[in-house]
Amino acid sequence: MTIRAEILDLAVPIKKVKPHPRNVRQGDIGAITVSLSEHGQYRPIVVQRTTGHILAGNHTFHAAKSLGWKEIAVTYVDCDDEAALRILLVDNRSSSLASYDEHALGDLLQELATTDRGLIGTGYDPDDLDDLLRLLESLSAKPIDPYKEWEGISDYRSEDKNSVFHTTVHFASDEDADRFFALLKHDKTGSFWWPDTDGHLGSTVKKQFLAEA
Image (cartoon, rainbow, N blue to C red; front, side, top):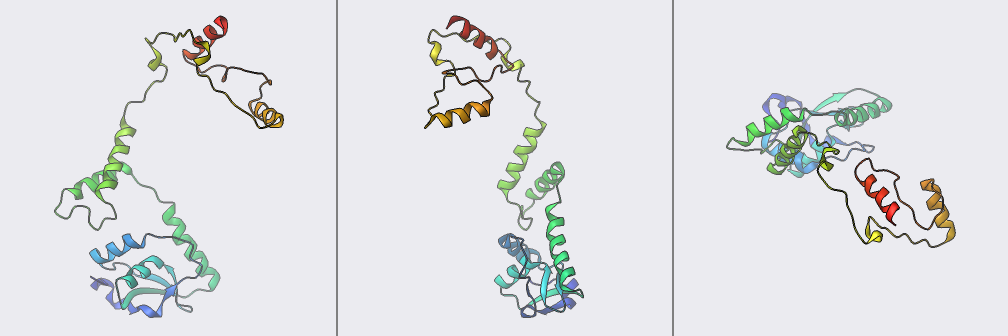
């Protein structure tokens, strides 16, 4: 499939247009190529008339060329070079600012996934759908109360007082050690407990550890 009949009257030789040399957008040409193969070109690219530079649809152009197309549908705009740059930027930026209703997206993809053609031509594959469904499941899961996680758990005790959350830090120089303690806003000592409190039963462990050490 090439240019759809609805916009065939806008077709021009593909060699008459060219990518804008200052386009900074990196698009997925592979995905666009699949779309053109499945659906054809259903909207024209936008081209500055005086230069032939593509302002919207640079990657559609590349995808069409990779498919060997000789023509592409074009809408020409008459504008100066500064306006052309603004159109180029806003077309890329506006698509980046878009967001999704992920629940509605999941419903649409699941609906199409049950058809004979599955997700072909949607830009999504089954792995994308699986990832989305896992995300939605995690978002709908009941939040975990971290404090309740500690309920019923006895205080930790160990005869080896040095094994409790013990970390040894070596410094290449005294200056490095000074900078380390300065970042922690802590007096320079041979050993210390960090942080002062963790908000859970670990604080009880700390008190016991310090009392028995």
